[in-house]
Image (cartoon, rainbow, N blue to C red; front, side):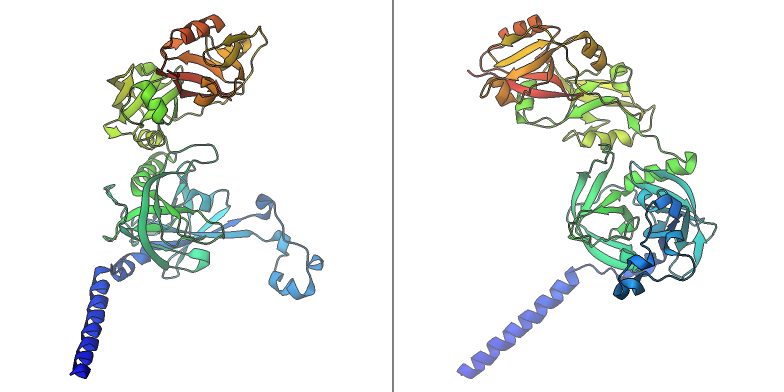
Length: 467
């Protein structure tokens, strides 16, 4: 009896194991159809750059140890005269030969060759590039090509399965899968520009995947693989793709004009932390605080002010300052949109005509020498701003912080030596005397915003006085 029970138990466990395996297998996505139907539209991009362009030459043969020379042997031209080669991925987006890839794949190269899955090769023309989004549009002379569709809806969700096809390390048409780890990731460029709300995934993306498609389970392209975060040179599960909404906008403009123009407000913005939110009368942190504003920019013309907190733009909620450029950048210049903002502790709505993107200058601090005065309640020593510095920073007044007492209200609020204070609460600061009056009028225990210029950039901090 015992043996029979034991056998029955073993049989039951085996059946449970197999049932679990079957259920698990049926719950996992099957990518085979996507690969079968869409991989032919994914291409390998091979680029070449003349040696005079790349600035780097291979070592001479007599400088290489004998046992390593075989790795540096070339036929034909000497190593220093050979072209520098590179590669990436891309995908066809129209039957008449338009191909989308990354800007960094084709940036500065002399020739672009497109190789298809059937081994056909075409010389490609660079129609246009957009470094800010890291996208480039190519075209080859061919017709009736397989093509991929960019997803029209931006409804990708965190946790959703996605698939990448590309040529990592030159291994053609490699397929890897994973899930969406996060959306709206802000990855500022070297110029501190932030116009792409990147999709973060754990898909295995490696060098050579750049410019390849990221698919959803419907076979739509939801992103263009662009970059990875790595300490080893290979995938560690942190890859980033440009959303299809951004790609579609860029493609349309590059097709029509060969260049991209983005929406522009002409403001410098910063995040709103808990202390700043309290000082501005917000119930919780959020929005984009306007720290500075261009005199002739669209925001200034519409009546926006330094100190306004943008909480909605064109009907879209702005959770943080990093989200505002993502929204504004996709709006066509000349469009009239509504901006919901917090001003003087009240919500207001203002209409703004969005302008085109321009570059802003940055400045360094320059202050004059005058007599010292002291704002005793804050524990900060200030002096008047020189006329030269006032003109340089485009302000009509202000005071320069010359010392901050350790443990004081100013120190705890984050005020630093060299800061130029231009506003306390709603009071513009024109002089040392005006600064003293504004400080004296502050109530014990109150929390107010303080605007300053630090190293050429404007920002707000929350100033809280002790009880």
